[in-house]
Image (cartoon, rainbow, N blue to C red; front, side, top):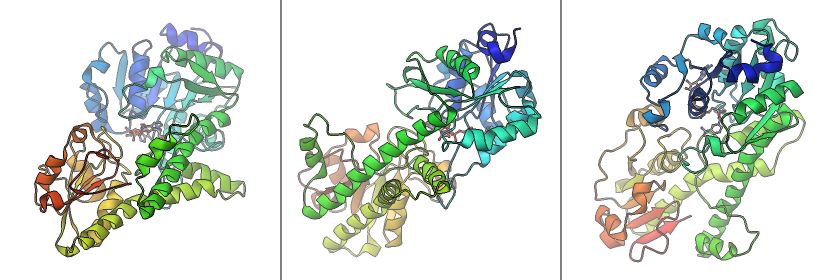
Length: 438
Ligand SMILES: NC(=O)c1ccc[n+]([C@@H]2O[C@H](COP(=O)([O-])OP(=O)(O)OC[C@H]3O[C@@H](n4cnc5c(N)ncnc54)[C@H](O)[C@@H]3O)[C@@H](O)[C@H]2O)c1
């Protein structure tokens, strides 16, 4: 086997070297399996229960079918000792925020420790977790060096390649999205780029530095967050004016350079989280971001805002709010996925409950045990009937075909009942019900 620092790509392709993926969630597992169709791979995760499922060709995140595991040269393990056999480590562990919206780097620091302990001369480490610019070099490399007793650049190489997959998206997939790659020197960049080119059909973009690649990822989501916030703010204004926001957006969208963004609840672990990483780092440079924070404020308020609009409608319909029952359809953070973490539908539900409204929640994709653990309430299996209002909070596919008659059947007051359509799915299709959307 040739010296890894110069020739890791050749050694991986000839299967003399092994690639490991540390953290096998939404991001890590698809990457591990894609590489495992061409290279030798070790898939490592601290969760033994998840590893056991993957050994049985089951994706714990319920994104990939068993077919995706076929023909893969991969060993799943939760034993950190196994990582010593690998030479090119990809880290894809979570980078959440804490209850004060500050970066929680514990999983990343812990994964860096694990990889650092397994590191040998000639190895590569590439981080894929979304972080603020500077995190890889200032926070992760010192841990790798300390745990391994080796020197970054001289003994091992480091890179960063942000992940851009979009859960539930069957069109823009891992291999069809251009991958940004960066390395701590030219040798690293060249080898990391060639390694990703093995699986990424869309090709790779070689960023000039690790910080640039980190910043690129964080602004992709920050840009979306701020633009959605603008749409949300517009929808609050137009609601007061009695104008339908979607009608306005359709009219404005006929101009060639009008950007297509829509109002909605911004949840999940990317768009609603990543801007806080940039805000945190900006403050270190004595800059207090105004636009980014304002966007976060608006988007984080929308669940509460929607609940208040509904309560006003219930009162306007002469109902005693304490005796009302509302059905919320959809609990996941976005359509057609099972992930309920950081779903802002929970704000809507808790706000309704704070007024004394009885809330029943259904979701065809969410797992009841996960909802109980995360939010402390259970999903209902049956949609049922006799509701004072129905809120369609997530545009899951089965909900798209519901008609006005379906909702009328669920509502206590039939055609006089209230329908809240958070995503605007039924706009222009509801004629009799008391209808409201962002
Ligand atoms: N989910 C997405 O669509 C998406 C898209 C782009 C980028 N990202 C970013 O990718 C990163 C990973 O996100 P995810 O959604 O895959 O997370 P996830 O929660 O789905 O998966 C993370 C996995 O890492 C494991 N893990 C946690 N700590 C570990 C450790 N110390 N060592 C080994 N394994 C550990 C967990 O058990 C879990 O299986 C985050 O930085 C996220 O912001 C996610």
